[in-house]
Image 1 (cartoon, rainbow, N blue to C red):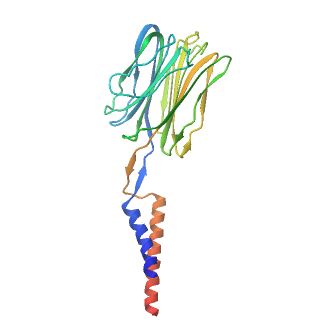
Image 2: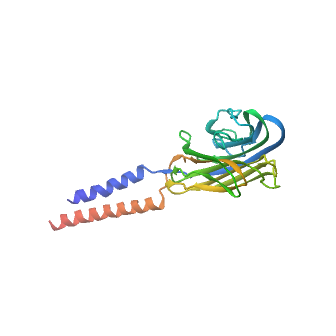
Image 3: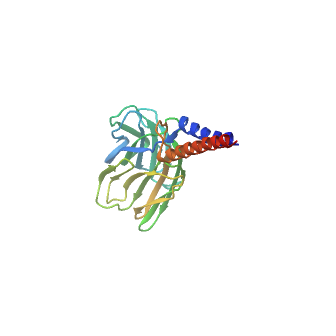
Length: 282
């Protein structure tokens, strides 16, 4: 009986020492954006931001054109398409495309988005991440789209299932009848969050806006929906994307694992003491 009591804690201790695995949280390296207003064109660029070798880049492009438009694959490089859709199916004039890839270039690159119907309004943005799983980077993607008349139209990105340590990204592209008189781009980020906004042709019936938000999720489960005010008489498209964190092997246990190790060691000592006491009294 004493030998059985000793065997279990020793086994637990051995397994804890030889097999420590953890997941690294996905971190935000940078965010960036661009907009183009005026003329007639079928391509424009979006900057990827600065980072490190091996980063995951996520870019999004939006245009206001006649119905029936679609995006081609961005260039240069090989990109995985995450969304390529209309803001108000089937008759909308606002289109959004989202793509992702890994890069070995730490510098910012200007990536070209191309579409098949010319436009005079283009909006775009990007996020750049570290610690993304190189084999299976995307946990889930889901999108909503609609046209709604009236004031304070709410564009809502859907809820998806994610896992702890992921980055959850929401991309909103919308066209309304008066986004205001502010134009241009805004970008900000920390290690765990980021945001950008790009506005083209403000104060007109072709006002086009794209907003991106990314944040670290520390629990498993549904992300919940997220919404923004798209303004007056707006058609919109909103997507939620979850990025998977990379597995890492760890030589140093966490505090909780040190606790388990301590428990196993204590149980082992108690087992040895019990065995010796029985032998002494036998």
